[in-house]
Length: 427
Image (cartoon, rainbow, N blue to C red; front, top):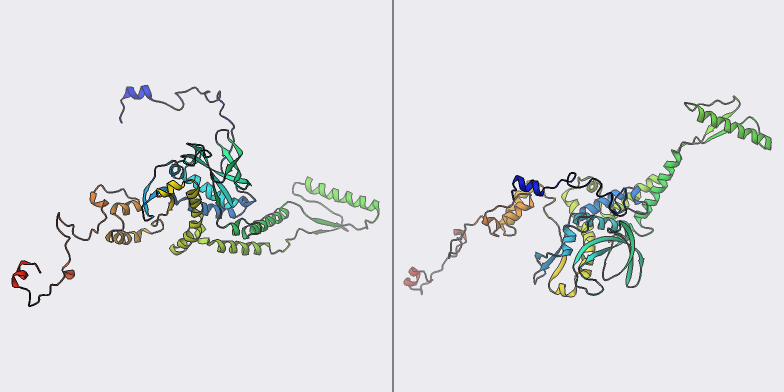
């Protein structure tokens, strides 16, 4: 709606001119941080290894799949979206800090790193202890720190105080999501944990070899068995250290009878070979190839990756939310939580024309649905929303659609049929 000059002058607002400069300095805004406090932090040394890139790739790909609160028909097929707080959390805004996609990425990243996480409803319309029928306003991903028979103790971020707090919830009120690849990634002696330990050992060896030590042995021209000789040797060693540290270029001098042996030679070990072996084993067990990580995988590789890795990752939280956040009455009303994957995301443009023609000709998708899948605006023509084969001529009102001559049925005339019936077309 257009506003005239006086309306904009009366109701206009500027972020810097329409308030006091010290307004927020006099307010108690709560605890502050230099870094985002609710961001997930990888544990157990994963942030210092190549595991981070693998987990991040898997979490980003899984977060692109839409999870919706929907209604199904009598045959269990998708009918429509339900405008609910849960659907708003999963697709629009999960909390004051995270949008829907960011929340899902946080959920998958934490699930892969921790092994088991909890999705906690923070703001609800009714206390879950009083009634199981409640509307979810906001949600958070929490770390489970203690297990009880009917309850769990979680470590979750409280956006009101700006702190991470510990709280106890009933297992029926939170979605407990377990990593489907727990045996490979989160067990104490799993392939991923062994790879992390080997990489930590390799980092320790690298730090030791590049610590700046010379590792020298000085052979003096006399024996050091007596206390006096040992004191002389210690004095000589200290003198050489001072020469090296005090010199501009690190140069020292020794006596002609003294011999110096340097020990910082690279020691051969098989750590690198073991790391390469464990890396290839981990990626083969997860079904991930280097082409997936660098973005050069073909369609078959991505299809296998989506079906064997991404689909189980998305199914785990979907099934848990379906049984925890939907009551039996809601499920009887054919409400469900399901996920939808875009089948055209990996299809190149060169094949979209043929696919669009087959889908519209066989009355699987409308023209506007095809246009939307390739990023075009829907057409305003009413025919673009009709599920009809455009290659057939459109029938007129009260008439049957025209049938090609080849498929017309032939009438067999027998001698017993009168000529009048044949002429009148009643045969």
